[in-house]
Length: 278
Image (cartoon, rainbow, N blue to C red; front, side, top):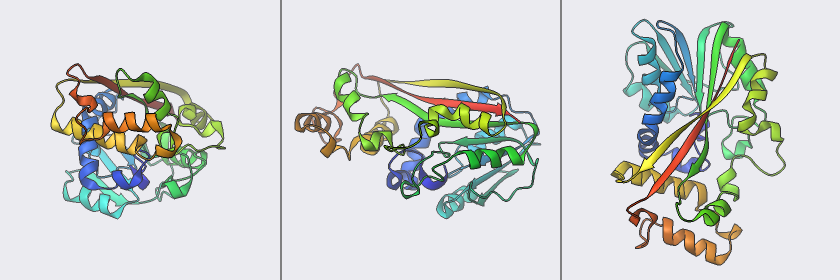
């Protein structure tokens, strides 16, 4: 996931062990989404913002032994890791989605997950305006080729505390990289507009949800604690004192009253898939 945007706090997700942990956490949902794409056997695809290549291998599996997938990411560390674990007919390259080197009409499909986040570059975003990126995706797709954009779109992690979670989700870190004053058309849930503006046809959007049920395995617990830190741990000065104390009581891994002590804990998160045809 290029530029380490993956989620709002890029310093956390640029840590490869954390990246692996979060990738394992999302794997069941991502496999369901990839299986829903209907990718053609033997096709050639691009994983734009492939990160460590964790999901590139599942894309490759879905197109069979004759298919080819190229993964591109800005992070040298991610590409180095990906190349150590790659499989046949999968290539990984360092590259910037703002200036892709591929010729016109080159790919049958492009997949880009948690990458084309519009926002300030100092937050690690590739561009404040996503349209030039989407237009370049259009350029390198073959006629009839498909673009798949995927974004984390919602979560419910604090059962029993809806007011606290609602307040936390209004804070700067929770809505990042969207910032005050940005064009509403550049919010991720307006990605249908980006695709249509760039020439894509038959543009659709669909949201996929993954449940989180007890008992929680170690990786799920670690992943959720990472999310608590990324989404909300920088929100102290935007909350009332009692709200901050409540958050720390429920979400600090060392708390004796952690939310995971609830034996009936349940949560969920969602990803929204936007797709269009050239």
